[in-house]
Image (cartoon, rainbow, N blue to C red):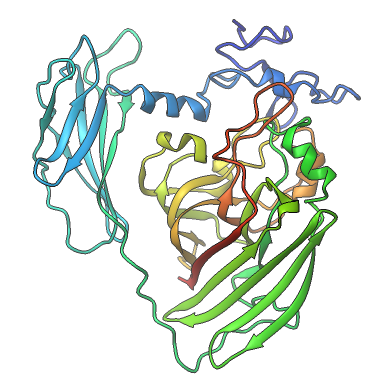
Length: 434
């Protein structure tokens, strides 16, 4: 087991094998500017359960929930049921708090009286509040903490946070506004005062430390998935919606992309379709990307959080209302362009200091990433996250499909449920100013 000191690779262990380096980063392996070894073996050294500074890696939150001693269940007649999963101890060593999070309303909290359960028992519980009639989708969370100092944690340490959904999502109510058109330029790109780069099709991401060297990231670069050329085929300005059809071409194939812009109450609805051919098997993602004006420095969202979320480890992040500065969502992996990724987002907003900004409501829970705009080509060529230079504003990705788990020559490929198959992908979202 490695102790995290700069003594070289000691095998997978508790700590990442990284040491302090110039800038706001940790250096892994040969990542000290010595060519050709600069960062070459960083993927082998970033293998611990905590970062070199002893802060937990995001995957540890997932393990906490997988091993949680309690589960929440909801039944039509019994109501909310607390089910114990421990074999030897009850719940008397814990204190807890209920948290009710409706999608379109404030979060409600109240102390929780945990039932006296023997190991393996379950019991129905009475909630201290009533589910509001309005507010759309609603999730109930039980946040449990240690009631006393334990050998492994101090008093008040959060132990687990099981969730159960009490109500499903409400349909989008925004109606089209007759006679109002949406402005697009001669290239079929949306013109909006809060965007510096209009929404376009996103099919490629700079590889993370889990995708380099080799593996699927290398295959994508060979097929030139990082070099699509956008060609406008048709722009139809009807009596309301504006339809833009484009072709995105690379050496491996052509993707047909259609956007329909419709003026709705308070904003613009964007409906998108992308047709992936068989030649483009296993792309990094399918979705939209746009850039905002500078100054929108506070992100608020309803979905899973508060930290980074991935399709293969969604259990670690409870659904609720969260907020963060986009830069704080950064995860200091050797190659971290996946940082800022939030799984299961229903709606989000970006705010400026003067309480202005933009909001986006999605057609269904999707993965969204909000990052500082490091150009993907710069990130892909960089050996660590300090080298790409961030510009102003934020880059927003909305994924209709996302292939998160990486693959390298040192590890297994992702299971069949994660790679993106050639198909017709559809998604929609509504953009509104605040």
